[in-house]
Length: 157
Image 1 (cartoon, one colour):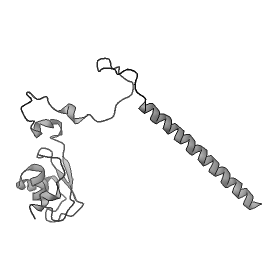
Image 2 (cartoon, helix red, strand yellow):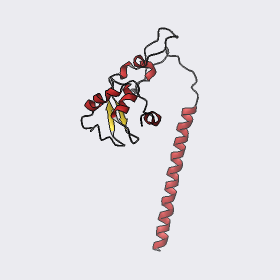
Image 3 (cartoon, one colour):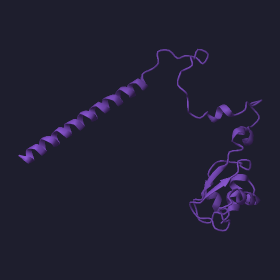
Image 4 (tube, one colour):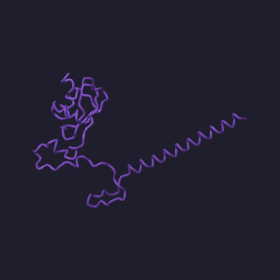
């Protein structure tokens, strides 16, 4: 008798799980169909009505870039990102034989900027850099925010 009660409880629990799973899938299906449904009319930017919800997504970097005077003038990287000049960058040491001077050369363009990296990272011992260390690079020194490739490191070792 105890076994039959346990089996009935198990079967009913499995049934409830299946019902909840089907209900969840149906809700997901409705949401995805609602997202895929084409809008009846594409509103232009001039006709756009403000919404009551607050948009918390960060602005797109392209909007922050200054307008170029002519199409023939190549954009200068420093001018392309004026808002990021004061934002520091954090480099994570990924390979053996990385040094502060190599890291400084990649991110700032100058080997001698390793001294500025030491000042920006007071707890870091310049002669003891290990894989996984986080190194703060001051934003006013940055020339690139692209991660340092291993190929660049190989040029120095």
